[in-house]
Image (cartoon, rainbow, N blue to C red; front, side, top):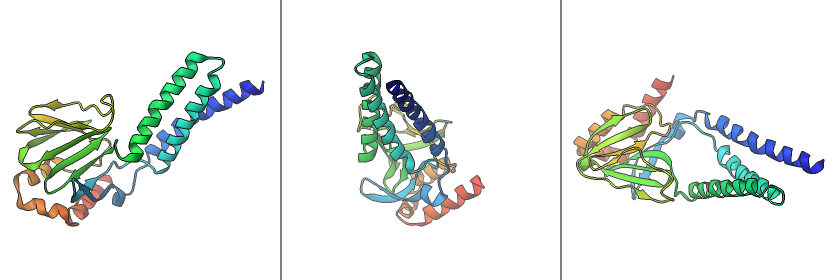
Length: 219
């Protein structure tokens, strides 16, 4: 009876944790945390982070990994297939958590630097120099940057993670990942065509301007 009750409680905890993670992930972050100074490839710039989430999510994620692995060990003597499912799933979740903790994964933050546009998402790293940008098309899930030559992603994780919807010789997809509303087309057009304007990306003015736009659009 105690074994059964313990299993039920463990399973309930494993189910409840994802619910808590999803709920906290929907929390809207303050604008000052979403639009910040950032850097990419050694150059300062404007960083636009996802505008939903909570720091506790990372902690709960590791608790969830530990719970799934513990559940797998619990079922190992009596249900090998269920144990294998939990242990493999826990291993993959742990790998993703490790990649996020070490910076290999990235959260989809979009960084504008004087040299170009940078994003690390799901271990897939992309840098698009301004001089190869022809334009930007926004879809519900991606920013599709049109380019004059191929831009090849660099994978920092296993290739099955961070797959991009568009990888063509003349375009590259940058997943939007819940980024806040901004006139991205106008921003990309400005910095791709006006070389003098790119220098301002190393300062605070673009950050203040973007924060004001997001505050107005979300109010």
